[in-house]
Amino acid sequence: MTRLDAFFERYARRVARRTGRRSFLAALGGALVGVGALPLLPVARAAAAGSSARVPVPDEHMEGPEGDPKSCEYWRHCAIDGSACACCGGSAIACPPGTEVSPVTWVGTCRNPSDGKDYLISYNDCCGKQVCGRCMCNRNEGERPEYHWYRNNDINWCAGASSQVYNCSIAVVIGQASEAQPEK
Amino acid sequence: MRAAFGFGTGLFLLCIAMGSQAEDRNRENYLLHCSGCHLSEGVGVPGTTPSLRALAPILAAPGGREYLGRVPGVVQAPLSDAELAELLNWVLLTMSDAPADPPYSETEIGSLRAKPIRDTVAAREALFSN
Image (cartoon, rainbow over all chains, first blue to last red):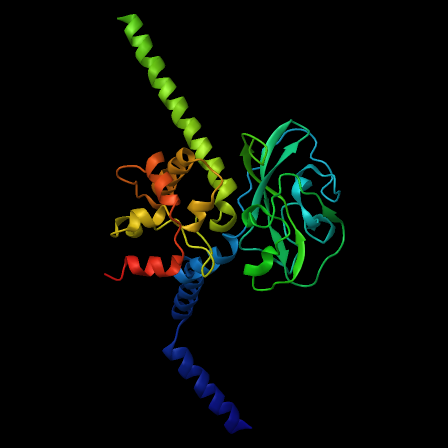
């Protein structure tokens, strides 16, 4: 036992002689700075952009009452075909946790009854997990036939996502429209 | 002299207002007709939709100017030739910092979109094969 104590004492003293608190602090500081600088690397930026760049940039400056995003009559749902994400654990502008926003989508317009203006609506599908199925709503104002695929809501826009399972749809205002769609 | 100064100021403000209207119109047309696939900032989706933020090499390549006027998104957009020419010029300038010189005209876009590219990937590769 004594020999064991002596061995560890010798070892501890040797470590103490060769290293110091300063070198430990220097290593710790380096590690902290390194971890902080990691997101600045191009790889980290590219990875972050890969997911966040898919979410449409909201431009939501409307006045007046917004309405109920769980309702099919909600003004933004004028051309939706599917489940409202507000009923599925998400909101009108956010996918439910565990799902992925569709990388591609279609954009239409809806008139906000609160201010009488038309707005550009990005109908992104949320993909993954399982089909939500709640608050199904099928309104097709301004929507076009499938041969105008870029303005059609029958397409499963999850086709370009990592999971093709449709969960629900969000309706993000991305700007104001000068006229209602389809164009006159 | 004062009248001339007032006229000049009015003309200047009118030009700014018209420029702002054109910016709004192009931005709206982009969001409505292009952003669904190319995304709102034009970054595209790797493997699905090309980025619009690096079009300078395509525009500079032999045949690149014609190529950009014949790709599916341009040909199929439900816009007039004049609106489309203005929008393509705007995309090149604001997203790729590569202004078309001279800018695309209504007539040029009208004749280009009348000849859609059948195989876009092959046509793009051919631009840089020489």
